[in-house]
Amino acid sequence: MHVIDAHCDTLYAMCKEKTRLQFTYDLVKSLNMPYLQFFAMYSPPSLLLQEGGFDQSVKIHLQMLKLYEEMTKKYSYTEVLCKKDIIAFEKTDTDSCNTLFSLLSVEGVYLSKGELSYIDYLYDNGVRCLSFTWNHSNEFAEGVNGNKGEGLTGSGKKAVKKCNNLGILIDVSHASDKTFYDIAELSKKPFVATHSNSRFVCAHRRNLDDEMLKTIAKSNGLAGINYFSDFLVEKEQNREAGVDDIIRHIEHMASLTGTKHIGLGSDFDGVDKAALSDVSAVPEIINALLRLNYSEQAVKDICAGNMIRILREVLK
Image 1: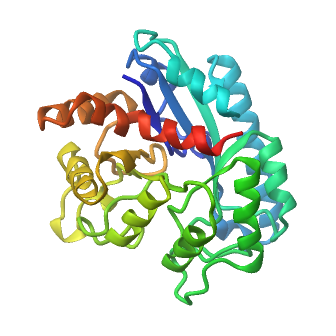
Image 2: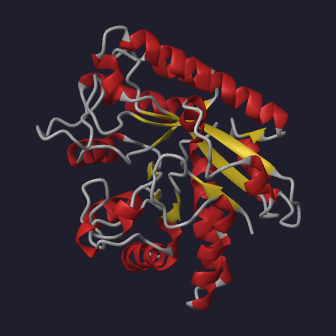
């Protein structure tokens, strides 16, 4: 079975020299299945408020680009840059244990200073998925921590069109509700929430309410299940999440939109409490869905097929 994980923070964790990673080459290789990992580039927006913070953020950005280049070469990842690359992944023999693909993404365009040319720069450096914000607002859009209802700025509206034209997948995971609906109205291509869950099941502001999930489905997009415990179970339950909680979110989403608009977005190496220990535990989700009598095709769609469909439509 093919698997696509639409979000991890492994590059930033490597920059911070984190000693134990939830995503590593050895762990993913042990799965013996074709695997496509989205690698996000992220640096804390709060760093920009410090003296010399912009230069430090640029340094982190360049370090992540270098790490990504070195990693893809060392482990022979096939980079997804255009439509033919995702078609190649789709056609990969499921018995091929060494077939690993990667896609570079950006979580918040805080280094742009509102300049659209920054998106061209990202595209030229291999980025094929981006979110305009992390939690904090910037010159393009209001993040999920925003409370002014401002949504996309004028530059942000132009950025949606530019992403559509270039072939960059737009991610709304950290968008405010107003930004979410602005993107939904303007985007001519499917958009996704790479790592967001159901707000009905777990009432965290980072999750999506039912109307949002339906709106993503109308765009032919998907929501990728985030394994972070705080996004899976209510804080009042005072427990860490497990695979059953991942399944609860999938079941609720499926009740709203069917299984064609659900994916996986682990948030590995970006969270401290995850429902899965690391990438080697992904088969636990597959086995749990099959035990619940989800069809093999539905499970294939959730694990990879839905994102393949979207990338085939968005990428050039």
